[in-house]
Amino acid sequence: MIPAIFLDRDGVLIENRPNYVRSWADVAIYPQALQALAQIRDIPHKIILVTNQSVVGRGLISLAAAQAINDRIVETVRRGNGRIDAVYMCPHTPEDQCTCRKPQPGLLLQAAADHNIALGRSIMIGDALTDIAAGQAVGAAQTILLRTGRGADQARLPQTAQLAPFAIFNTLADALVHHFGHF
Image (cartoon, rainbow, N blue to C red; front, side):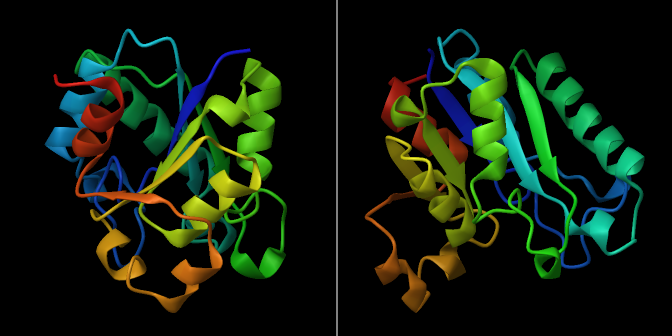
């Protein structure tokens, strides 16, 4: 079994959009995230994107359109000499009460089953407390909140007291340097 780095998408790799990412025109990749992924390309961890995309469940874009955006993000990371090994996406709305929408652990559990991942040696990185809760629900070794995206606001919420301690970093690059050394 191998460890993984689970990454949220919006607010971690790309900028959040108040009206959702509905097309490639809405995608703005953080340059530091692209560079950081290139720097850790050869680590033994799987690198897996786990993303809630209620934009699909709300009927604002099709599942195929959301998958195409994810595919293009993965391709952009690859062109930048980084890698993302897999993408797991929840297309449901919060009202659907599914088991895959973070904070539920379904996406991480499915990825672990598919890729023989040691969850207890893995890292979950996100910009929301729901990301932290999903990582903690599967017993991830480390959960990290980034201040990019919604993270700075999320870190101040009273719900943080209900979670086990987690690390906070300014950017994905900062978090990865902390874990894997200087680039």
